[in-house]
Image (tube, rainbow, N blue to C red):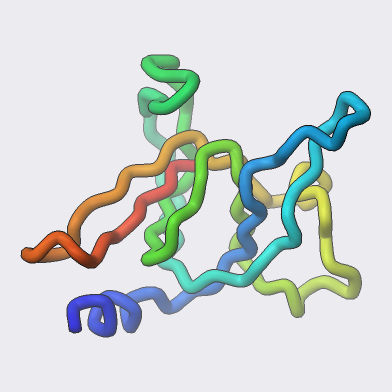
Length: 121
C-alpha cells in the first residue's frame, strides 16, 4: 500500500517523547521515549502554531515527517535510544532535542485512510 512506499522514505530514526502530563507535584513528566522512523529536514522558517497556542508565530528549526501520530509539546531528537548509555527521561536535558511546535496531518492518497504527519520543531 501507500504506507509501505512512504515508510521506505523514512530512512532516519528519532526519539519521541509524548506530551508531558502533570506529575501532581507542580511539575510535568514525559512518557518513556520511543524510537520512531522519520525523515528529518533541518529547515528554519517562521510558522503559526495551532492547537492551544493558535496563531502565535514561532521559528521552526526542523521539519520531521512520520507515519505515526505525534503531539504538540512532545519532543523529538534525531538519533536512537541505543545512542545513550541510560534512557533519557527528560528531553529538555538532551542537547539537540526540540519541542514540537506544530503538527500537520495530511492524507497520503485517496481514500483518506493513510496519513503523513509533519512536525515542526
